[in-house]
Image 1 (cartoon, rainbow, N blue to C red):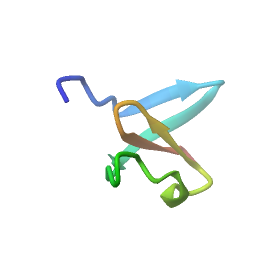
Image 2 (cartoon, one colour; image 1 turned 180 degrees about the horizontal axis):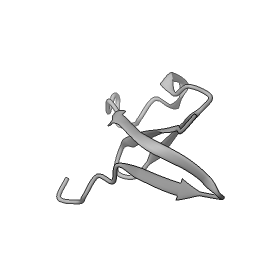
Image 3 (cartoon, rainbow, N blue to C red; image 1 turned 90 degrees about the horizontal axis):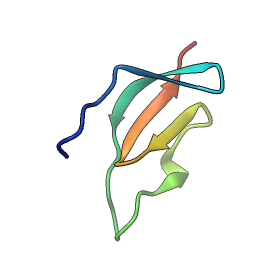
Image 4 (tube, rainbow, N blue to C red; image 1 turned 30 degrees about the vertical axis):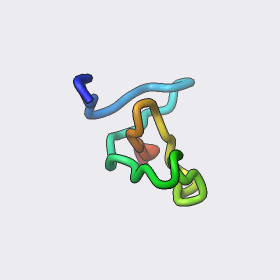
Length: 51
């Protein structure tokens, strides 16, 4: 991917931590596999809300 994977990110005063790399299937990232507390960030990185 050539870009750094940050351990955590801040978005609208909420903190999210890196969880995993998304699986690319049928030319897309299936968003229905994300949990309610997760975000998909380009280029296919999944972050979950820090509890």
